[in-house]
Image (cartoon, rainbow, N blue to C red; front, side, top):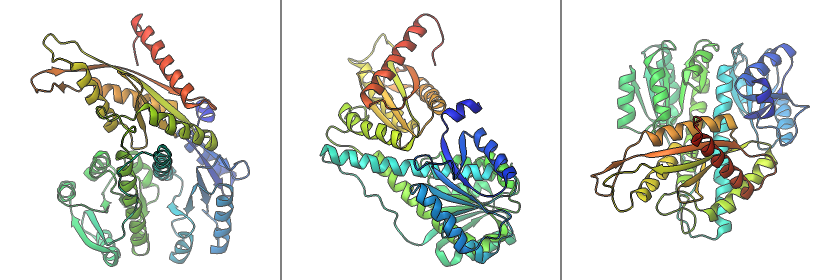
Length: 451
């Protein structure tokens, strides 16, 4: 596992801090999660995805913190900065440090820190894909109608869910100056009903333990299309509790003692990011027009693949990040009394289902009548394999209807993930994916199990 991660990590985290023991522990934890932790001296401009400043056990002035953050931004201007701090650092120091990066409170367990890095990288990937796709649309000179990318400002609507007590009261008082409406509920069921009936910009969950029903609700909301963009903040009494909560789906944490001073700015920043993320996802889904998307299947056309794929390949080479692909071949099941062309309708519906299963930044392209290619930027081959299994499972377990809704039919899917070797152009990538798909079909024909 260590060799695989060293050869192709999901991201590279630049670390600035003192103490070899603390860095060694973080290095092992990040490697287990698929990330490479490198020192500032060993990092190059193309290597840094996130800058990590460790201030635990150190009394750093605002000027010194600004100097450290400036060094990271100089070496990698595109990377975000996370600052690890001790729980006991005072309010004035936290306010000063917040100007230079996002604060993460941690003692010994880094699971919460790793989850924050994962969320920051997720936002970065979507933002980069939105920018690259906009360039491709402009270069093709196509007439497109898509929504603008913006994060509208305004008062917030916040949901507070959990047992009534001092923590809930402190959160309510801290959010009162910046919220238009703050709804307080006591259970996961009430929180679910509130989220379904109203639209919130952020939520504050106060679970009693890591097995509280609020934890299951947070995972469900993250998977729900309507609520996936809503940030959920978990106040904790102990920083090490973030490790148990992160395993169960939580992604944003803070200490209960920091609520009066930090909850308001943290919620405002999280809500602004969520609004921007929602706007970018809406833009990525609305990228369509003459020659951009196939009218029947909703997948991107070969014309757009040639233009945008070249940008993705160039971006992967410049940044040093991985670029993976999934080649898909869909075959309709034969029916005794089918409609005139049941295969075409099944292919169109299956392709639209692929668009809903994949991420917003992934690119689904139709390269043949029954063959599709999913390009996944900043993704390892291992994660692409998991995505291929998910796509195949969803398609093969979905029953499609005919035009008259009187016939049912299904599809058989062959899915093969592959990694783009460095330096390959988009045409060579398509050829590589098709060759692996053909090889997989020959193996399946000879009796070996398919993916």
